[in-house]
Every structure is written in structure tokens, then in C-alpha cells.
Amino acid sequence: MTDLNDSKPVEPQNADIFPADFVWGVATSAFQIEGAASADGKGPSIWDTFCRQAGAIADASHGDIACEHYQRLDADLDMIAGLGVDAYRFSVSWPRVRPSGSGAWNEPGLAFYERLIDGLIARGVKPYLTLNHWDLPQALQDVGGWANRATVDRFVEYAQGIAARFGDKLVSITTHNEPWVIAMLGHESGIFAPGLKDRKIALQVAHHLLLSHGLAVRALRAGGCKAKLGIVLNLAPMHPATDSPADRTRTTLEDGRLLRWYVDPLFKGRYPDDVLSDYGHDAPLVLDGDMEAIATPIDFLGVNYYSRSVVSASGSWDVKTNSTREVTDMGWEVYPEGLTELLVRLHRDYRVPPLFVTENGGAFKDIVENGQVHDADRTRYIAQHIAAVAAAMREGVRMGGYMVWSLMDNFEWASGYEKRFGIVHVDYTTQQRTLKDSAHWYRRFLAAQTSGRTSAR
Image (cartoon, rainbow, N blue to C red; front, top):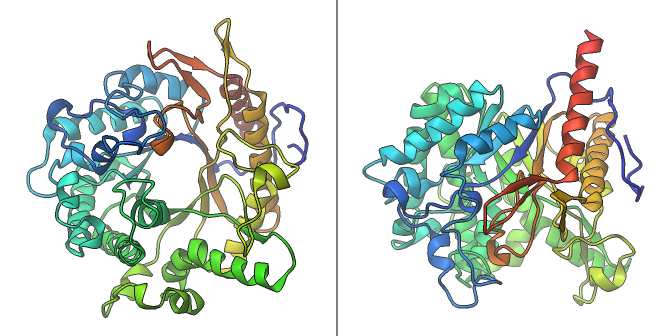
């Protein structure tokens, strides 16, 4: 592997630490790549609506076209298989398959995902499906969205419908991707869809997301779903900017808001007392049986990791002026050892099932030169974080897999098309795909893993 702080480009090596059943993959989400915003009966999502709000998206763009994945499915599946990955993590667009969030299902939308799943299987790639990667049907938002407890029931019905149609073909089903983002960025700060700014609503949304997760897992198991079931959280270690009591106290609270508020209910069946106290009257309404449902056992926990967080009680710490580390185009510090710290902490503090790194990657400014993209910074980022996973495994953490975010450049939410995370470059004018050096590196690395598995038999 490579030293976590090594700034030089690295070459793939076979690491004995990764077992033969360790899953290597790439990840995307529906709204970010599919386009075809109203094709074949698809209904609008909250992100379709949000993109039309003045000033909501940095470049005033939208997801109507995105990467045209809906039209270019077969070629994209060939590209995925050509990387040599074991798995592809993708999401279903709820409004594409059930436009109103309830009622009639949309057969053309379902048929698209059937072709996607069957196409993956035919190419030897395992399908890892996410039910909710943020694009709630606008029809449900019109009646309160995730703040309305009825949406919990609609989500369970949606999960059952998808499992009934595809469950026997899927390796894994994730209920929600990053409920913290949906709740806090979408409903407290308002910088993501649906653009609300109310902390009390945000916390009720967070509770309903967790509740719908637990109830959906129960329902899918009761229905005989064979896929592994879990949830994906965005997590980061919290470090105080200084050793002052104020910074340390604030760090503990921020850790509670990001990590413990979601992980404690899942594995301890309760919200953390210190965070509940801080939220006061804004704390969510919790009904009898809710916490037991949320704590329904799961088969895996997905972890999305990009950087650590440094916390200052005064809010004065800024990564660009205070860190000596490389910073990505998102303004995030490159801090791979934080991933090791995070994984070890989850393993130590909770009775977790196998952990998957379900998203990890870096946005960097790319230049296409003579049909090539030399992204040594992204290659280094990925290699260092794979090394961080290996370090966690050496400390006893049960890891199930690692997935690069993202397969290809795409619509990066409020940043529009200005930020590129892909290991495949997308020319948004021509839709031409170009494998970056990071994609070639990842393919060589995976080939080395496969070679090691073969020689070990």
C-alpha cells in the first residue's frame, strides 16, 4: 500500500489484508447522472423543483440532462464492467418508478432499472441498490414531505415494491443515503432540496428518515427479501481546533449532531442525551415503538467519508488558512487517517455489522489533454484512503468493501456541474466519456487484487 501522508503518485500493489470476498466498486446516484427528467412518465422530484429556485445552484444548472445515463445505459454498463469492479452502487429515482410517491407504478421506469440490474449481472457486476438518494417525489413534498409521518408509510410501500420486483437479483439494498444531509442541509440550512430553514422540522425529518429505515428493513425481511439490508451515513471524525475547554466541549456536541444522533438510535436504540438537551424544544416527536423499530438489526452499515471536521467554538478555524494539507476543489482537507480513525471508532463504540466505505473520492480541477486526464491528485487521494481502510482492518475492523465516488463526473447538487468527482471525465456538451488516470489506476489495482486472490488458491 502507500503511506497515508505520501504525496507521490502510487502504483497498485496486492495487499494481503483484503480478503477474497472484499467488494470493490464505484458509486453514483440517479438524479446526478440519469437526466431524462420527464421521460417515459417520470414525475418531478424535490431536486427538479429546487433547481428552479433562483440562486439555489451555483451555475444555475439542473439535472434535466446530466450525463444522459438513461439513454446511454448499455455503454455505461460496459464502461463499469471494463473497470474490473465487483459491484456498482446506484440509486433508484422514486419519482421515476412511482411518480406521485404512492398509487400507480410507472412501468417504463421500472423497466429501466430492470435493464440496469440485468445488464450488471450479465456483465458479472453485483448490483447494490439505494432506495433514497435525496430525490423525494415532489408530490409527497407537497403534502409535507419527510416532515409528514405519512411519508414513512409511503417509503415502506416503495421499498416493498422495489424488493418485490428486483429483490431476488440484488446483492444489497440501502434504505437511505446520508439522512443527515436530507434533514439538516435540506431543512435547517436550506442549501439543499427542499430548501427549508427550520431546525425543528429538520429534526423531525431526521427521525422520520430513521424510522422509515427501520420499518422498511422489517417489512423487507418479513417479505422474504434475500438482499443484504442496511443504511448509509455521512460521517467524519471531529477534532477540536485547540485544546481549550470551549473547543473540546463544542467538538463533543458537533460529534453528537453528526454521528451519535444517527448511530446511537441504530445500535443503541436511543438518541444521545447531551444532543437532546441541546436541541430542547426542537427535539423530534418520538412515539412508542419508534426507537425499537429504528434499532432493527441490519446486515451492513455504509460509511461515506471525505474529510475530517475541525471544530472551533468561535467558528474561526478555516481549512484553507489553517491546514498544511492538500485541499480538494470542494475546499475539503485531504485527511485519509481520519477514515481509519472513524472506522476504528465505530468498531470500538458500537456493535456494528460489517462496514462498507460506500462513498470516498475527491473533487479536483481536471484538464483534458490529447484525450487524457492526468489526475494524480485524485489517484493519490483514492490510494491513500484505500490504505486507510487497510489500516483499520489491521486493527480488527470488519470491512465488507470500498466504493469510489464517483464513477463519472455528474451534477454535484448545489455546486451544479462546477465540481468533478468522477474517475471518468464527462464532456457535458458531447457526453463523451474519458477514463482519467485515476480510473486506469483503479483498474490496475483491482487486477492486482484479483491476481492475488487467484495465486492464493
